[in-house]
Length: 388
Ligand SMILES: *Cc1c(COP(=O)(O)O)cnc(C)c1O
Image (tube, rainbow, N blue to C red; front, side, top):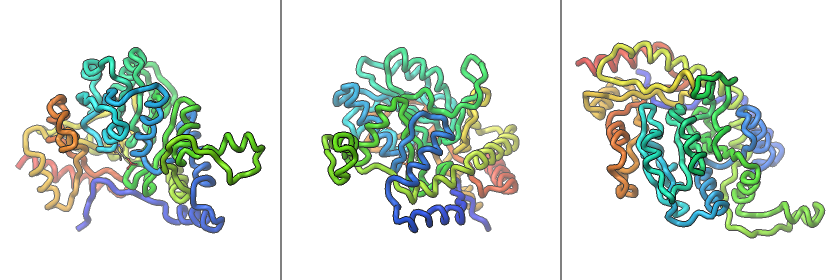
């Protein structure tokens, strides 16, 4: 019997191999060459002004906070508002810079709740990391408005949002499809192995301000400052450079970029299939009592549909998971409330919705290898488990 996993990447193997072959033949697998091509392609696709290819979303979130902390003179212990319902990278990034995570609760979209966000703002609040769970935007536009009003930097963790676009503003005025990220101070994407644009591990960091982008390029290569030397030496002495800042080894490479360049060509097509899967699930589950489907905000956003999530309202989530396993279906949970982990337990108890949803959420299988018959099988299985 076929095993149905929650997430699974689809690679265009032949095309990817020929793209990688070009790197190998040319003897160039590192930073530069394909990484530059991928950065240009990503800017074309998203219409974001800057894009720097990096080794993961996790390092991108760290880098964003590192750059902003220095630029805006934040000090240790300054507060970053964040969500407990995310992959742990989001919150580790805050700790890497000795900043303090302040957890705000989530709304029905599983994104940060606007009212709780407002309540968590203090004079020490410097930034908000906003996670678009499953590709949803939640109340992003109102959140952005509050950030501007309080001079809070908006960092968008767009790990799930490759291909999410805004089609109307919150007053209902239509835009032409605008990729998310235009209004954030920085947007960080993940191209990890099971995300919508899978490579193996990589990401893209897109700053609004080109000066930040320039800074990022230096810091992802250990702080090596080639530019100033090149300027002063008119391009000669290429081996000479200065190092005036403690940078990191965070840049991406041409092998990952080769995979990304091919996968990007299929991103819209793949996301459209994810949207189709969502519609099928919605139709088949709409009358099922005992669950709540997590919706996006369909009149305003076109979600990338990285995840299809439901909440189990009455029965025990974990025993439902076990019953799925018996039928060779392997759903996921996105996510456990991060403040339940030992490292974050001092923050536990401030976000009742997140804590509740963390016990109820199930992610049903959604990827390019799911057939319409699979969806029927999965939803029938869920119905019989719920109704037994
Ligand atoms: C996957 C993920 C990350 C981390 O991405 P990497 O590229 O694996 O570092 C961060 N935040 C969220 C919400 C994610 O799902």
